[in-house]
Image 1 (cartoon, rainbow, N blue to C red):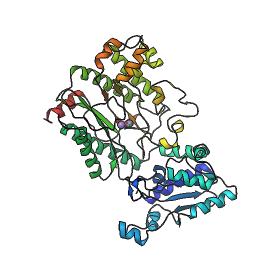
Image 2 (cartoon, rainbow, N blue to C red):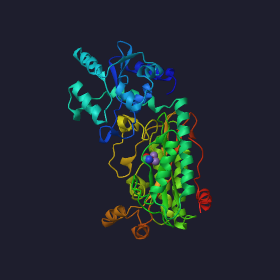
Image 3 (cartoon, rainbow, N blue to C red):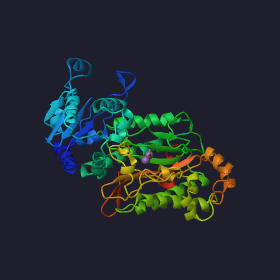
Length: 465
Ligand code: GLY
Ligand code: MN
Ligand code: MN
């Protein structure tokens, strides 16, 4: 945990923006894998972690703005708990470390909320995403589960987003740590990968290193020779000479802050000429996007710059043609780049996605408002501010099903050279990804530098054999 003053001040700042009512924070429960006592790794709710720092299940908390009182609801360990899990810090000690004076039993939460509702007091809650919390909230608020998201407090949601979006010094330090550990792991993978290994061998090493770092993976690693499958979690392929490995993996620190890095490297010592051409296009798009990262720049424009740079490179390769500005405006480049250039990061790898992309990545005046393939997957469009932490992750993805489907109707045939594209059916995908802090004058890369150019990567690969 950070110092208690940090949590006290975070809560104070939030309270000062919300006036009256009750602010409710639902911690996460254990999540059973196949029976109750065999749970997935526990992950605390990030908003709970941000305001209270207590990383354990079966807790809730509230700030009663009218009574100026903060209460944590939970239980001290029973003798059975101590027998099975060992004596740990008491809840009282954890609450003291969080600067919280009042503790009540778990079940007292329902009583507190029922009394408040009976007095027509406003209970602000965030959109729940875990089944247990949905059921609990639906019962106490007398709402159908399906209506909870709609009934969640927009004022509370927006206040949390505004606060969590701007990273404080102690959070930036955590992001540096997460990115540096992740960079070490990426370097290790580039050094160890050899033909004949499976993707699983690499994933096992990544998981081992993440746990050994004192943290864990911030999301299931994407480690694949089929890099065109954007969130590929199949690890059964064998690495073969001539293929590319796409490694998208990052750790979260013990305090919960995420790193999210991607590198793509050849299984062989060197990239093929064609792989190098495509890689350099991605790298140029990355560089052009990074150059734009500054306060007040819209990330939508960063994304469009990346798309145009990719499309220009593809035109040079003979895969696209025609007017590039028009092609990107109409979405033709999405044949090769189907997703967004980046997203906010923090205690969640896609920060605060549970609170709503419309508020995290967009604003009331800059709404996403598009169904265009590609652009609809851009998670962040709004103007950047100092303190934002985000990714830049352009890529090129050659998806045979997409080629076939668009090709069958000659979709965007004025911009896409379908004849030449046929030769790229097995090309797979390339992505590079780094994490950045927006500063008052521009941006700063998070974590230690990691091999990025084809020359840097080939130098590492040469020593792997
Ligand atoms: N690792 C998922 C992403 O890059 O967004
Ligand atoms: Mn990412
Ligand atoms: Mn990633």
